[in-house]
Image (cartoon, rainbow, N blue to C red; front, top):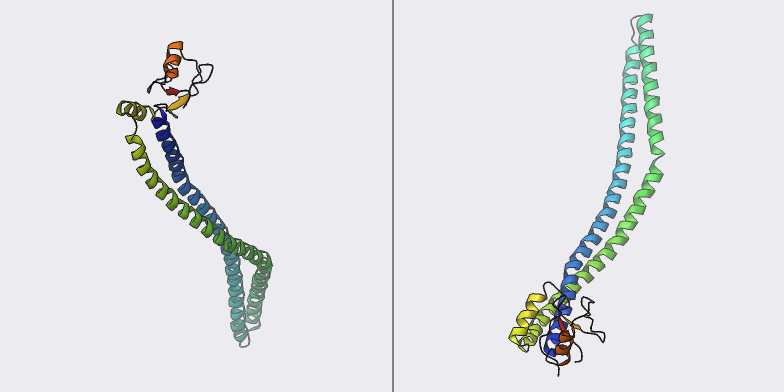
Length: 233
């Protein structure tokens, strides 16, 4: 067996660990994005409700304005019935006329605002349906993410044990070289193809290096990138 096989076995485990670590970093981001999307849906619902509430409040304000004017009209009519002179009577009549105009105008504005109710109520209903539908989907998605995070963590814990066992089988000098290089180059151990080209950096190595690889020496480094070379396992 090629002595570099122990390095290959270790590298296979490290490759899986690298993949899982990337996934472990990506999963919370995906969960946060989905949660943010739901927040956007809920924000749209809040906006629709606020718009409807604002119109409803404006209608109440106009109705209160009309009711106040009508109350003042009733008071003036009582006052008018006991007017001391025709002049006073006419002055009160003019005040009543102004208040009637004010009441009519306030009621007209209230009715105009009420015309917005169907559109705004429809918007609220649509937003509620969307938020309700999205909430279930997001909850399911987030649960899947949480479950996968737990699975990844468990697999990483298992691989950590497996890695420790694989590392024990590698020659200490070779292991030291591998550990130093894997933070800068990946993969560390690569094939030297039939054209004497390193599959890591894709550059040709000198004949002397190729001969060492052919003789299956345990640690043969590419003269260009430093990766560990092998040919036949």
